[in-house]
Image 1: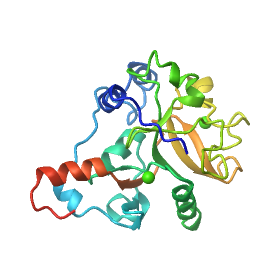
Image 2: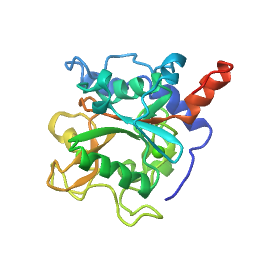
Image 3: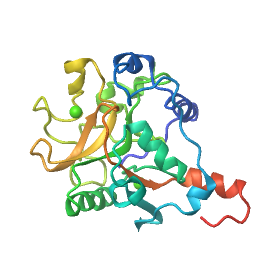
Image 4: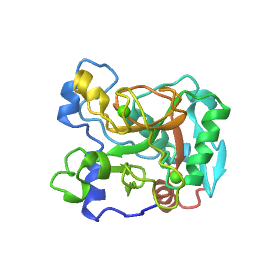
Length: 239
Ligand SMILES: [Ca+2]
Ligand SMILES: [Ca+2]
């Protein structure tokens, strides 16, 4: 897999800008109560919650939990930003799927527990700060990244380096390969967030671009950045 960390300036821009939903999306979703309330920000970690964060399983040194398996969050379905913020208070973030092994592990989790879909931290760089970036064009191919760690994804139309398959679905609402930004044609809402769907389009378990206001269960993964931050600002804390 191609691992290109964004240039220094962009992570900062993403970190700040991702927190505030773009005007365009806010306008489009104004009528939707839980979608894009203007001025929503990323939550900061809460040290006490980081200490007792749910550790459902561990993979390569990171703890994970599926919201539906944790009593406090079992019945919760939330939009993408709310999902990130719930994870972040635990020093986690929505899952970022950097390797085929991690993807296979998540597919097994979804299959074995019959999970219909989950949010991941995957995001299209289509907000303020992503303009005038020729390296991200066309966005549908080169514009996707993991917001949890700002790592760029492989081009969506290729099998990622080191993988044996392309995780993006070959079909969807428009019977086209993902990402297809299908909802834009229906109601003008961009499909800017990445969800792993379980056979919704008779396509097995696969990646789809989905509009971020949809409410879904979510998979949290340890955030080294947030854990390090809380560790460095709380002497003696055991995370
Ligand atoms: Ca990961
Ligand atoms: Ca789609």
